[in-house]
Length: 340
Image (cartoon, rainbow, N blue to C red; front, top):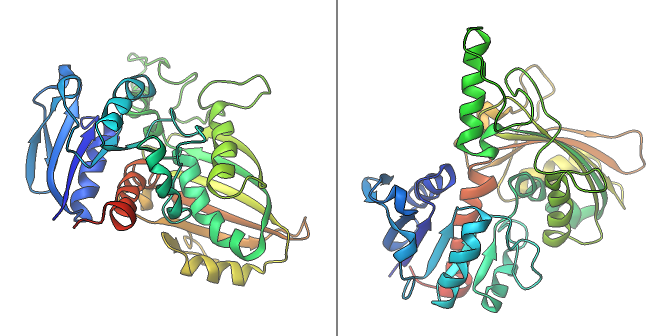
């Protein structure tokens, strides 16, 4: 016996990935529906070897459905997620709307799977920000061993994190570089993204942080440990898919780099590729389409007493969004719904 699954926002990049991953991981599905706005009604979308036609989200009744994977913006989620939850369908939401609600669990299954048990307060579970998700997968096993005091992270985030418009803008601007008569000014981003980097993701806050940087701080505290101090600089780079992060970690106790490497090799969801030679590390282009969070460049930080540096790369459309949502659904199945 399987589950009745709704994918909300099925025509978008993340919604399509959710359907792909459900099929790839052979999630036990009895019935599945692809939901989108009325303007996308009837759009054909692949689900394994099947083709689904999207149905109208506005007219859909969630009664009797087990899980809804939401991949729509916060404004639409605010309307439709409570409707699904009220009908008894557990919502796994990829937007930022519910991440900071104390009554709604924020879950990365490799890190805090037990948190899914808090779903019953509002029948909603939040998926973290893409940059946070991959980082906490790396932090948690190290924190369990040596207690993390402080994290300094610089991100190198791909344009797919800004949706289809971000991907299109990089593509169009890159082509226009070689065709001076076809100028493509910045629209989605604040400055030209082709052959450039932009130290600005989301809106600026009063203290000078961007909201993306604030999310990494707040979400790490909620998912891993509220005592961890985090400071982040988030940068958009001209890469289509795959987020990278340079992470500096300060521990309460000494942790040797060799032991850190061994701990990470055994940790769930992580693939360590760390050779001190040309090409002995993972870059974004190599992680696309993979389920793992890749760790490279593990080394001692000699400038502090108990410090480690590492490089962390992951497919942001997968672990940073769709994969994590499906993993939450799998965890719900194992711990709560127990079908399939």
